[in-house]
Length: 270
Image (cartoon, rainbow, N blue to C red):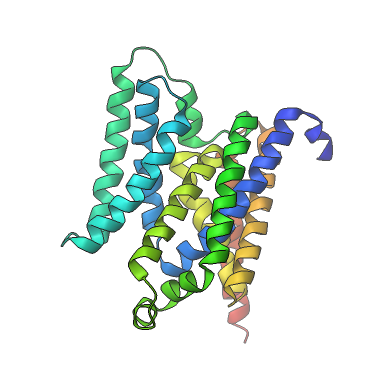
């Protein structure tokens, strides 16, 4: 397997896998503990509107994706917390509107948009140095925010009411957490695409949560698992000529299913 990485595009893919794994290990743990899985899915699908906007104006997709993901995240948070609209309704609306806006904008520009397929379903093999630079910068922002606000995030995720009582500005911290989810969506899009982002957010962190009660250890385990899944998906893609993003998610899903069956099996003999 090591011989594969003599090629530059595979080395770039390996670096992208590592950066994406760090992000989804940290933020994915918050998503699973705080039960924000549906929100992460809503943000990732709403981002398609940003892709369509960038394509319509002939810009790099990331120029549309980054601000659009943040607006979608804060839109979901603002609508659900400051109005009578429920959170799941806000997610559903922005999810559908974002996808529809992307489809309309892409259809308004003549010609075929081949690059957008990679953003929909992921194509880690096409990641270049500019993409890696953006991913590294966003990872740095995630790590800094996590270190500085770790206790606040911890309080928010496990007992938001108590956090509010002890003086944590839960509204601000919640919006910051949504921003981290949005940033992670941007990072993971290049690996598994808009459609499959939710899988890497949840599967590694869900497995890690069953193995430890420590949030820090959960983050580390989730990052390692995400990296192994992505690396395994790359190998499957190379050997079986399958899409890397889909192979990664199928591998992660298979491990998750086997892990659950093994836990159920051993629990019956306790």
